[in-house]
Length: 288
Image (cartoon, rainbow, N blue to C red; front, side, top):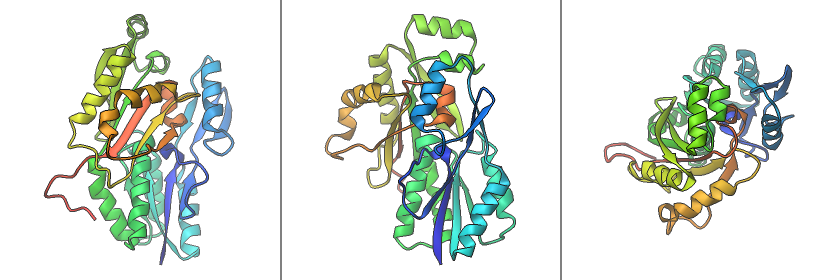
């Protein structure tokens, strides 16, 4: 039986994408008007609205009915669905997918990525690699459950303003951070966003980001990896790439780059740069 990989738009996978992939859109609401992420609201349009607007948008999880329709459509087409979704600690989307899968016992598989944005995306890309190797749906889901523990997502934020606007930090902290040009470095750990450190200025921030990557077992270049950025241009990301060239030299001729959409962009704002990769597995970890 063929396999259908289903994910949500928080994975930042935009068209064109592989025909085996279905991306279900999250809902983004600006001032009472709803948009389907990546369908009638591009990443660029999202940041234009975010920068111009005074109020933060809100994002809504995908409901069980959308997943049930996607699962049923795949099965009726002779495909076994494997859903790879946004961390259950960040959204109820995983729960929606699980509820939908109950209607198809043993025939639909759901994987909590325990990640977001490009961290979720590289797990989807890994699913496609396993599909290409001929694994069946159950084996793909099981392997993803194992390998997702190797994913590391770290990001450097350009501003504290959007964390303040979202009520995640006090206004006084954001003010001081802005005056001191504080650049926070964050990561997704155990499915949640964690603050790793703060640096003054983008150069020090880039150095801190590099050091956090170096603390891992190292980038496994045999599995998917990706760089992403928020905002309307990639100038800050290109600066980071220049500052971190030793991480990539000799391993790749071109770094895969994409934009980070509204699910994460709502909270971090423009000017953030992110790196997602599988770290090299421990010696006792089985990897296909």
